[in-house]
Image (cartoon, rainbow over all chains, first blue to last red; front, side, top):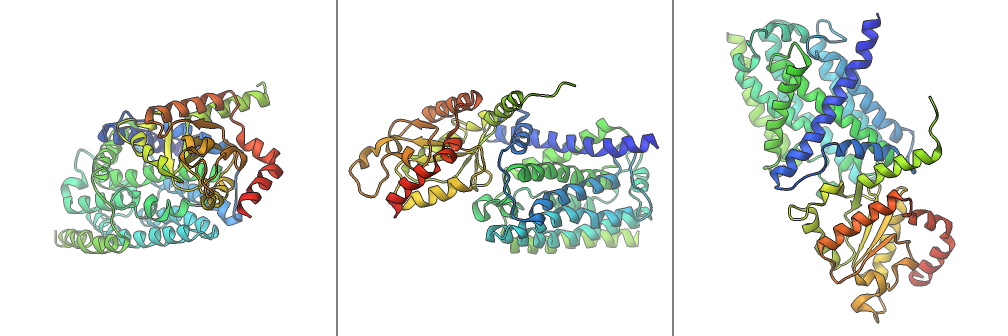
Length: 295
Length: 170
């Protein structure tokens, strides 16, 4: 019982620390790619803490203030479902499918809050976010079905266990892994899929009216978001990990490749992004599904 | 555990504020031309935790970059009042100080400090990126010592500022 409570408190903290460390490293790497010196490594911590100690916090309504909290709560719930280095808090048959639903809560919380601010930029940003989700969810569901069929289970812990001894899904289902990477990439909103928060078009979209501690909470929820998306990819395709260090290294490898792409690509329009997702990743995911079915 | 005094909390808050200053990307005049080199690879102001942000709710610093029209003043006041406390204003270039080359123009604001409280001025036409960065460093020192209190002055002397604004804007 005590162990369960410790894990319940510890798992979100570890997830947050990992997500935050990726935010730190990202800013430094981006700066080095652009041949700048870059900020100090703990700059995101200063940013979040500064937002939390702002004297003024403007709210546009109850739902506006609750939006970031819903986003964080949804993220913490998702953290419990994802096996982190060998153990997962909530596990059972079908948790992979439950996770697909829970991962949407973060975006929906943000959508509720941004909608309450009644700012046209926020409305456009939110409609973009939900449309983009509509785009990448189709290939995501198809690859999740193929992975589940491959291992005859919808339990994430069993899927991780089945990939032991280097028998990763990446090697057995390479096409699904590529689609999974593209989907994870879009879910994180890196270039070219940063249509949701595009500062030059919709002034950071859903975040446009958020300031002070609300924005601080949104940054915390973003750290969780990074962790969830990449951890799911690592568990599904890179065989999870038995200890936290290897888990972190695998996640970092995925994230590092993503930053490299992020820095050289321009931005899609929203209709182009959906068209892209429903064309190539969906077709490749279907081919992979057929391969699993006939094997 | 001994409870922290209000003074200590304020010191820590100021230490955090000076390390992470976000400036709103709102350009009133030609001085904004000097900001891209300050932001990008050559001078890289992100070293000091400064970053450009796009909306007034997220930003901490408002730069009045160069001349300020009467027409623009209305927008500047809206933006300034939308920003969340604590907020800082930097008057940028000679025009914000005394009108600069537009000293006899009917459409340009000569003294910024009569309409919104400026914490700091950068002299010159144009100030070079080095001057801008040194101004930001100076602003950090002011924040650290608690002297950058423009937003408090605005609240305290609201009647004075509103009166001046009304005279120009009508």
